[in-house]
Length: 320
Image 1 (cartoon, rainbow, N blue to C red):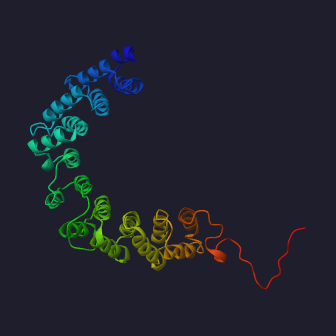
Image 2: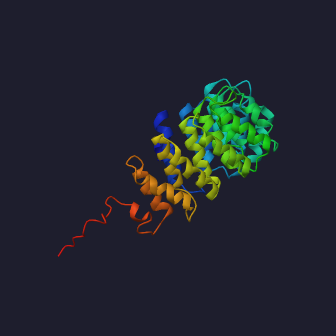
Image 3: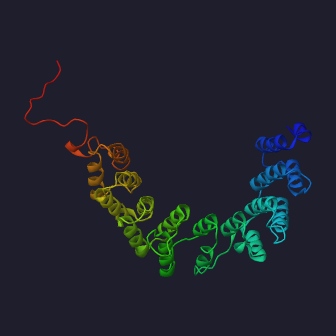
């Protein structure tokens, strides 16, 4: 493979670099040195440099690799080069491979959170050291690209202050004046509410789940977050919503969310799943969820479950 790399055209060379990285072990200093050279060679083809950067990302623990990535990120993410697409990609890949302290320093020094290029700003939000008071969130949501707004929301972590819960709830709300129109951003906002934890965030998720004017996808995501982060109380709210909604598609999504609820299942969850197993539209999803949350039970729903119910007026006939 080493021999083939030397004489290959760019696209094949890039593929062989990936292959060679997989064949080598962690102490492959010679190949790491070659990858550093390819990544930093401005005369090398773009695909070769990208392949080399992927190698360096995987070997980021080495001091020489970190030094190379820092140099490349600083050069390609400088304001003078951010508008060049190749530079944008190479710089973002280098930034992704940097250790947290170096990445944070570079994001701050170059002002990357306000970069117009969505790839750069997204990676910057993933790497930046953000203020604990959440003051950065409003600025992040003013960025024109949904990828950036979404990336910023992944940085929300609980416990969240009341102001943070309020802001994230507004973003997630499809019916509000400040609601987010883009589905990928709204989904991250609802996931952020889940990570916030606490009663205020749980109440916001329940309101969204029960609001018939909300988009069904957002209601379903609210249900998933309630099950994931709010234990039995969250699962009970989802169980109730699954029985109330006339939207079969939403009901199926909520039943599937209950499949991940805590064990042992709350009585309300058991009742909702058993009821769903009787309806043709939701039966399949309900049976899967019943298997997950009522493991080892032969007849978890009693006489209600199963394709055939005994008729008390009809005598049983047993085979000979």
